Amino acid sequence: MEDKNSLSDTITFLGTGGARFMIISQLLASGGLWLNLSGTEILVDPGPGCIVQSTKRKLKADKLSAIIISHRHLDHSADVNIMVEAMTQGGFKRHGWLFTPADALGSEPIIFSYLKNYLEGVEVLQEGKSYQVGNISFTTPVRHIHRVETYGMVFKTEKHTFSYITDTRYFDALCKHYGGELLILNVVFLNPRPPSDHPLTPTDHLSVPDAEHIIRQLKPKVAILTHFGMTIWRAKPWQIAQSLSQQTGVRVLAARDGMRFDLSQLDNS
Ligand SMILES: [Zn+2]
Image 1: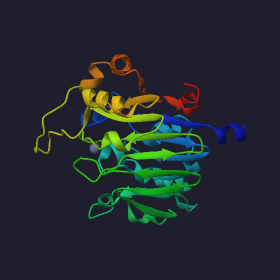
Image 2: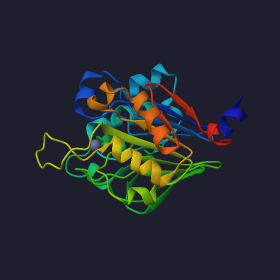
Image 3: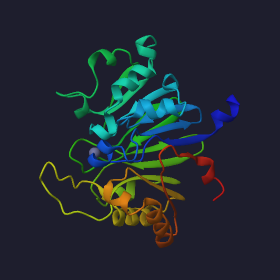
């Protein structure tokens, strides 16, 4: 059983909600992505409720090798402190790494300083760099257009390559950098919104037409939409995924809270 585990690559969607109103209502859960890649467990973007969603699903934080934060917004980082505490067994076992953009460690850091001491180390994410966690490597190819310093990731396991496009406004380089058999996309808006500088009018997110364009360009075997805001949720993400599949010829799925995607599905398609 141990053997079988170490061979498979799975992604568990702890939550699929994104942006303020979805998060404060918890209509959809939040909490990030739990990766189990050839036995190496990595938590990405532990938003609010991560500790609840992960323990409920019997995922063991002390098995994590790393926590990766794509950016400092609350819906991606709110539970980082408690998850570091859980990863290190309350600080009794110094263990694991935190990867985060520099601005999440600056004047208003996302992590308490006493918790930093529980970690093996903190690594700062930078554009175009590669990182290693156990037998897994990942890159942060390009800085996103978002209000704070933000990076998506391309993960390489022994068997698979997949990309995670976290929050960003659309820009053409997204279609160059995020290859692989699987593409996970944070799609907050149903329709594109015009740029705005008002702090309470966030516009730096992908919309459904942006997702369609990116999927057409990158042509992964499977694309999974997640991080839904209110407009896309009301329009039923699973129906949107179905029409995107028809339009692009790529199998597009809408993530569900708690969904576990096994990357072996990619092997014979
Ligand atoms: Zn954000």
